[in-house]
Each structure stands twice: as C-alpha cells, then as structure tokens.
Length: 200
Length: 342
Image (cartoon, rainbow over all chains, first blue to last red; front, side, top):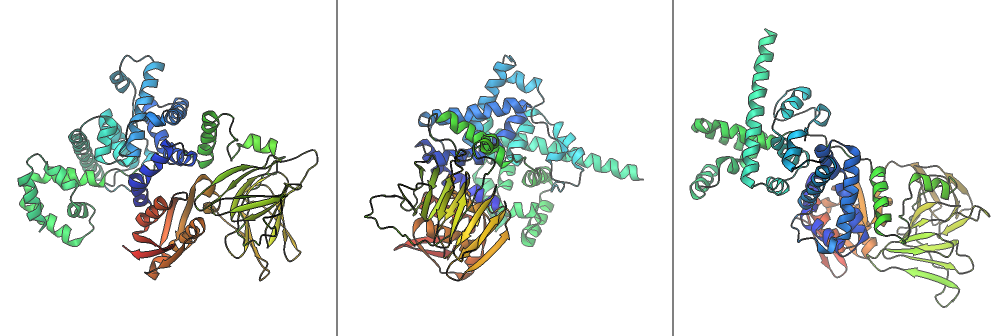
C-alpha cells in the first residue's frame, strides 16, 4: 500500500507540488528534496562510484533547480524529470573532472551500475540463486542492461520513464530487458544444473 | 475471454510485440506471480498450445518478477543537514533554517535543546482592545514564520493564534499549533514560557512545537529537558522521547514513552507524516488544519491504516493524496468532508 501511495503521489499530487515549487514555495522545495535525495544519491553513486562527487553534484543540482525553476521546461513526470536531469549533470561533471573525451568513454572505462549482494533482497522471485551468485550474474550484463535493471527495479521507474531517463526508445528498453533476462535465465539454469551435478 | 482479447490485440497491432502485450496484461502478471487460479490455468493451457512462444513467455515472466532490491535510504538527519545547507545558500539573509545542525544547537542553546508538542484547548485571556497585547493569527491552510522581539523564531500552523504582552515577549499564549525555536539568553538565563489552559511549559533556550487542537495539552519532547507546570499545581520533568498529556478539566495525566511519532513534528515543513495511522486520526488532523467536519459514510473506513506524507497546505492535494492512498472518495460539501468507499 505504501508503494502504491507513493506511485500515486508521483503523478497528480507531485505535479501540483512541483508547480508550487516553481512558484517559489519553500515547503514544496523541501518536500521534493526529501523525497528524492536518497533515490538520486543512490543513482549518482552508481554512475560516479564516488560519494563526495555524488554529494557535491546533488547539492549543486538542487541549487541549480531552485535558481532556474522558472525557466525549466514543462514536465510531465517529476521523478523521471529529476532522474534525467541529474544523470546529465553527473555525467557532465565526470567528463570535466576526469577528462573523458566523451560520455561513451565514461561508460566504457568505469564499471557503472555494479551491484553488491547486500543490495539484493534475500528472497528473489525469479530464482533461489544465492545473492552473491546473482550479483555476479548481474554484473556480467552489459552496462546498458545493468542501468535498465537499476532504473526499472531499484528505482522503480516504468519502462516509459526508464526510456526517457536513458534517452533511448521504449522498444530499446524492452529489447534490453529481454536480452538481460534471457541471459540471466540461461545462467541461472546452468548454475542450478551444475549444483545438482555436484551433489551427485 | 482473455485468449480472444489477446488474439484481437495481436491481429490489430502488428507492431506491438508479444512480449509487450504479455508484460502489460493483468492476467499474465497474475500467472507469473502465481496469484489467480483462473489465470494460472488459462496461461498453462495457452503455453501448451503455443510451444513456439515459450521463450518469450518466460522472458516476459522474468521481466514481470524482476530483481528485488533493498534500496539504500540516506538517514533523515543527513538529508535535513544537506537541505539546510542548501536553504542557507539559496536564501542568504533570510532566517536560519528551523533545524540547526548539531554544532550550532549545542553552542546556541547551551546544550539544552528540546522539541515539544502540546495539544491543548486554550481560553484566550486577553481582549483584542488591549493595545499592549500583540497577536499573530493564521487562516486555514496558511503557515507563517515569525520572529519575536527577543529573537525567538515561531512557525505558526494554519488556524492558529499566538499572543503576548509587549512588556513580556517571552511569555506566550497559544491557540492552535506552533513551533518555537527559543533564543537563549545566557547572561540572565531568562526563561521562556508557553501557556495553555492546562499547563505552562518552562524552558531556557530550546525548540518545541505546540498544538492546541483537542481537549487537552500534549507535550512531546525530542531533545534536551523541559519542565511542565500543570494546572493541578504539580510539576513534571521530561526526558527525550517522552510524551505527557494533561487536561485541566479532568486532571488526568498520562506520561509515556513514544517512539518515532513523526506526525507531531513535521507539519511545519508543510507535510503531515503518518506511520500506520488510521484514516480516522488522519482526518482529525485535516479537520483542524482546514476547519472542516468529517463524516464517514462507510464507517469501516475509519480503521483503515495509512502511511506516508500528506501535504497540509493545499486541501485539494491533501484530499487527493488521502483518497489515492486509501482507495476512498472524499466529497467536500458545506464545510463537511464526506468519506465513501471508492
């Protein structure tokens, strides 16, 4: 019920909250900040792998939002808007700080969206695989596949919003998900088979 | 039925992939989660009849089930600290943020920091004609920040009123709900009082919140220490995490330990936060904030539980948030809120 509640908040009420923020309402700004600090921080950390960079970027990002609130483009969904903009901000920062020539280079050189076993719930619906093994499997996916998995299941964005955040088409998200889970399923099955064989 | 629907969709939308149809189909989702026996039976049969689609079906199932994460939640005090940093940067010169960070609270408040909530019904002892009395009032849904002559900050919630005599600005009377951040005066150790008909709160430098909505006074202490002078002549010292409520009508005192009752302190940031609170309790908050009366058309809705934040400065947003989180319908009619099952 709690998650339903926040999902609903994200649509109509959050839009109203956003409009109040644009009008300069301090409480609305504080409320948005408190709601999105954790999810955006986690997302940024998955990209930068650096707590200080993420914190600084996030602070500058909210200051930027407040300063430019009247000039921001019309938004449909607060959550995906914040994710898109913060993703852009942190990538720009990484490019400048670490002197990458392009965003592609960032995605190639860093291990973005690495998952740890601690981040996974003990009970997984998809299989009984141990979390350590599942984390290894997730980390064997491509960077794009890991980001889709992260946005869809960790940040709980819809497929449409995931596409918007990553600036790819709805169909690309679907294809990426299908490839990712096809690989995961095959690997899980193989692990289960080898586990059975080892027992004998 | 479902099969027919699926066929129609597949035929009419050549561009829509089977995968896309499956993951958006409520019946398929039920099968994937093993939830509805009719759906489970239907999809078992469908799979048996479409062996060529088995891979897509199992990928779709995996996408529906997904990966379960434990998202990291940054501690609330850390978030508040970051927020205050930003508020200080974007509003230089304006009043300091309400929650000071640990360092300044210790220096400024002599180590005595307390956050208190009072729930009171107050009888105003002053007539409006008396010119030495200063009064601040808010209308429904309005929240204002005030600075008292001694430097104390006050946030006054909707439908509330504070008053004091100009000659004694550290002796405040309250009706409604307010949050105080009392300025300490170390040289004289001057006290600060908040009066209600039930009791008097006595503090040095501290932060606390006062609510005079119900037929009694409730005091909730978050930090520091505080002394209460009850209407029956006795005194009570409180330690953090305790709540005392007292009514001078029946002289009844309750003194108990409370855990994380956020709903009492977050209103000043524009949100009521509820943690597994009944709709009945939630609506009482709304009644007070907006001066409305609630009528439960479907009585059993009273006990439904709700968790999350409800914005308290805009009735429309507030009601729509409650409606959506509880599956109810709330109709506003002549200052009354009628609550139905949806």
